[in-house]
Length: 365
Image 1 (cartoon, one colour):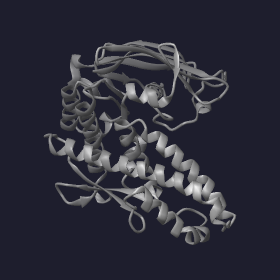
Image 2 (cartoon, one colour; image 1 turned 90 degrees about the vertical axis):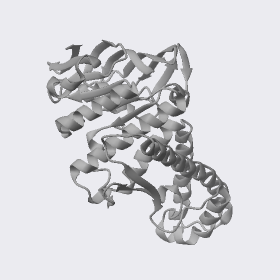
Image 3 (cartoon, one colour; image 1 turned 90 degrees about the horizontal axis):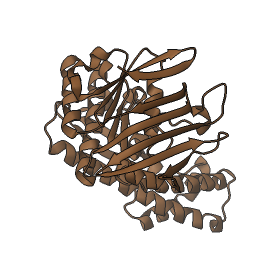
């Protein structure tokens, strides 16, 4: 089992100082809106690679008005091992990570802690732009392979530099070669990571009975087809230079992909489903991600579910809690009322989050 058994927040968002001792059970954070519940699960999300569930800068996470920087410390237990993890930012600089007192990369952290989440801003995933769906899929791919983040960063860096050449209407092929090789190498890895992530999700959905609807998923391109190999992608970038100069940006590559979903039982595209159905599909995918990871690495990930219970009827809430308990996952859930989690009973650890004089406080429920 993967779980946080201790968590300390210092000058993080609304929390001047908060300490929690945890026992591995699902965690219920309840309290009024604005008390700081989401800030806690955002802190938990930073025990994995990336910018956390809000995708905020390190500067945005520091408590105001002090702006002293922030620090998170926790104890991660997984498969019989225990790790002391610290992550922090000083003077609004990029965050750093330390494991058992030694500095490590975020990719190394991702090999130890797998964390997946569902937050209210994702509810519009199926009806908004493709960028959000790519980010959603990349986060899933990252949960299976922490090196996916490195490929994404390398691709974005090379593409930005190539786009500058395009906007300056540089036509000398010499300037493009190395950048297109970098884009082809990283882009192919990104595409393969996404394809493999979708296959993991398909198997996890097909092999399990669940109360939540199954989604049929496909990776599509906004224009044409995604080249199958690194060499083909490099050739496509070369061939597209003059079109790209006219557009001022790259028109081929994994940044043009989109995630297409269908409510399988009804054959209806996810974008055309009701709000409730879209939410149920998202929950289904997060649970499938957790089941697939459990089978792959031998333990389920930590789940972060912000305000998830408020959008489900009693039957669906009970079904969600049953699946979380069956997985054996430490799920962190937030809600305004403890009654939303009554079906969990003693299966969960309750914490009350309150706010006084601008400072969030956490106490056992």
